[in-house]
Image (tube, rainbow, N blue to C red; front, side):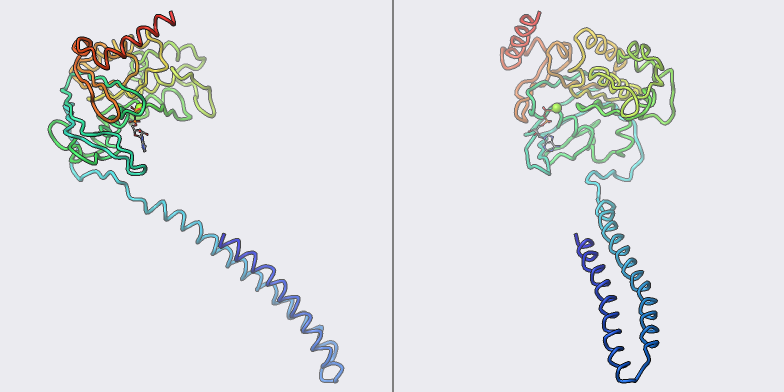
Amino acid sequence: MELVKVQAMFYPLMLLLVGLSNVINIYIGGIEVMKGNITAGNIAEFIVYLNLLTFPVIALGWVTSLVQRAAASQKRINEFLHQKPEIISPNVAKQTIKGHIAFNNVSFIYPDTGIQALKNISFAINPGEMVAIIGRTGSGKSTIANLIMRMYDCTGGDLLIDGQSLKSFNLEGYRSQVGFVPQEVFLFSDTIANNIAFSADTLDMPRVEQAARDAAVYANIMELEKGFETLIGERGITLSGGQKQRVSIARAIVKQPQVLIFDDCLSAVDTRTEEEILNNLGRNMLGKTSIIIAHRISTIKNADKILVMDNGEIIEQGHHQYLMDKKGVYFDLYEKQLLEEEENA
Ligand SMILES: Nc1ncnc2c1ncn2[C@@H]1O[C@H](COP(=O)(O)OP(=O)(O)O)[C@@H](O)[C@H]1O
Ligand SMILES: [Mg+2]
């Protein structure tokens, strides 16, 4: 807006001054000619001088506007360049993690909205365990995943990995060992193979294919004319919601992570495919840690531990049979889903 103001002022003003000086030139010159002090030729001479001066003045205005424009752009670029990341990786060597995760009285408030998403959460996961998280929308499930990925630092309590604060790990080294399938799938406008191998340095086709098989999307990809070389996204084809989710799963498992987090990424997949993926997962994640966030109880029945979340708190936890015997919230949810299934059948 400042730039526009300067421009709006500058050009009319310049034209006005040029015009005005011509008028003054002729007027005063005319009087002088009539007095006989100068000749008419002198006026013509001065008009030529004036017009010779016009271009440098215009150039001056042009340069001023360029400088103004550059200043405005630089200001915006600086805003971006001066952003400081809130998550800072300590200057330590990368280390291999075993996959023990512990939440000790963790609370979390989203800094931008002030919403308290987690209240005094405590639980522990041992390497080799599969833990499931279930609960209503907005109960804080994705927030747990975000904290484990260290997208944010918890605002209260401790998050320990292998008994050590998550903040003390080399961030890049840590994240490279955690496979995360986010709730919102994000695929690039690139080939399917590159999308799956995204986290790896090199494109290792046998591994990519195996990951696609484990994610139960191999057959779908092979049906496409160009297979793994098919372009997706803006310049290519559009995959269905379930296919996108499974490509995203393949991306997470291709790096054979120590810890795997599925954030509601089986919602658009039918129950039979889901079962296939979970079976493959059990094989691949043997001795490693997996966290499955889901809506359907059928997805998580076989988990070693189930956390039932509500409004930022864990209201029940234990394995399936224990929670069923307890006849609490989990039991009600199970009954309701069973009923819905029967209605749909
Ligand atoms: N990026 C965010 N910024 C601010 N508030 C958020 C953000 N993500 C989630 N929330 C809020 O935190 C609460 C928990 O959300 P979330 O963990 O996404 O729940 P769930 O995954 O169980 O549906 C909700 O009230 C939600 O509005
Ligand atoms: Mg969520």
